[in-house]
Image 1 (cartoon, rainbow, N blue to C red):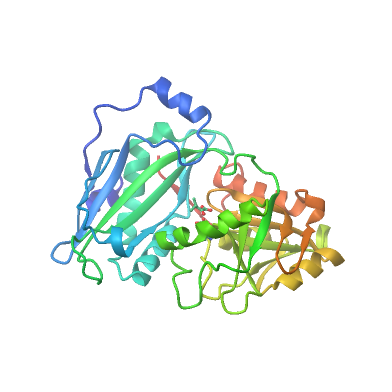
Image 2 (image 1 turned 30 degrees about the vertical axis):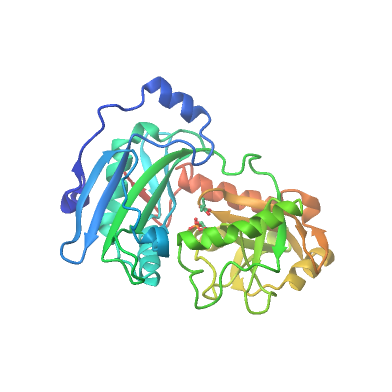
Amino acid sequence: MSSQVREWNIRMHPSEAVASADEREAILANPGFGRFFTDHMVSATWTHEHGWHDAELIPYGPIQLDPATNFMHYGQAIFEGLKAYRHADGSVKTFRPVANAERFAASARRLAMAELPIELFLASVEALVRQDQAWVPSGQEKSLYLRPFMLGTEVGLGVRPAAEYRYLLIASPAGAYFPQGVKPVSVWLSDEYVRAAVGGTGEAKCAGNYAASLIAQAEAAQHGCDQVVWLDAAERTWIEEMGGMNLYFVFGSGDSAQIVTPELTGSLLPGITRSSLLQVAEDLGIRATQARISVQDWRQGCLEGQITEVFACGTAAVITPVGEVKSRNSGGWKINGGTTGPITLKLRQALLDIQTGVAEDPHNWLHHIC
Ligand code: PLP
Ligand code: COI
């Protein structure tokens, strides 16, 4: 056990009824995304009086809550998403967990919640992944998806920051996020609904952002699109994100290809995959910048050939190509003839190779667990 686990004294109460090896292997053969959960979870509680305490690993299972628990009414609920990868030598590593811990703390601040210390976040990840390490699948498109989350658990209907919080960490074996695998998605430009406005909660990973996004995702589906693309709230002009992923635009091709991602204006989620790709691209000799990109820039760029590829990125799906755009006011257009481009594939492979230990890890992004 690492010093961090000891420091936070995560009490271990392992389950006496874990899945059998056969049950587990059947699940790991085709895990999908977010459908199955490992044998354990970690829980910790915060109160004014005691701060963070009762950090423990317990069997995975239902939790009991009073109906007046305030997050159920006023939405103090935040989460994170990160992955543990099985390397060829059998070891298990997570990718940039400190960045997730820092973003979790930033989300807590925005929602006026107690901040979980970075060390406790890491200790919880280490304790759960070590305990449930048999659940980390092998193979480049497979991983163990970790879902830390925190809820305001004070009982009462007063509208104020809760005086009590519950932190939980669960884990779910994951295959491809999109059932079709790495295949270009079609996107609908959402001009009616917005995801977030500057000054709102767009930078935070809070549950409410996802609830607010569902109707726009349904509208995208009605227009025959796989995903929604968010525009800025004020002008409905600037490209922000795609569903639950950040976006990248590839300008030019071959040795002169450059990539550009929408700059962080305050309403976008600062993705860890996004920030990693800025670095991975530079390492591959591909210039990477952050800038504002309008709907018109996107359309014109594709029609005139400057924009050669577009892709979305996030922990769950890594990199997903965008093949087609549809919109109410600007018509529709294809990107790279609706096919996956070479820069998209190159960056995807380069990032996956680091995460899965096939390539060097020059920036020390991997965190060894066991
Ligand atoms: N944007 C949104 C709205 C998200 O939910 C996510 C997923 O976490 C991302 C972007 C990508 O972030 P990351 O790369 O840290 O997973
Ligand atoms: C991502 O990791 O890219 C996500 O958006 C997570 C999603 C399941 C909320």
